[in-house]
Length: 174
Image (tube, rainbow, N blue to C red; front, side, top):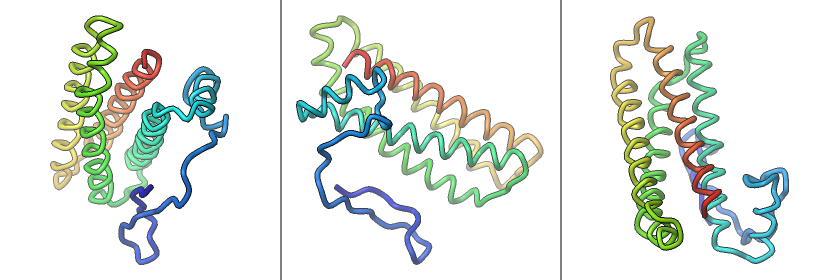
């Protein structure tokens, strides 16, 4: 399994390769029911694990990016271009994940719980709008005024909250 890695030795991006399959789940990394549901999935070698691990990775990246935006808002000015690139990468992956959910997971879930697919698809559109707003803000960063850092922190916080709540609902129903 390969994952993006920004801490490459030459200072550029890279790829981290995990050589072994994911078989065990550390209870401290669980995302559901204090770990009980995730452990159950792990014991069954469930394909749902990929879904859960992806959500955990998205949550971790959103948290890291929000912390960077908060640091930026409090005077620790970092490279805004690097932040923009990380958000573009996250947005791209999240968009593909959302499309897969809309096309595969939610129609199957809709058989058991009516109108779930439409509801989650609308939430995906709302999250896409939040990403778009964030990119408009980041692209206007050439005119960094007094309000830009606060707006950036607020926007990243709203995105983090919306996506995290959405994923928690998905996990509960899936």
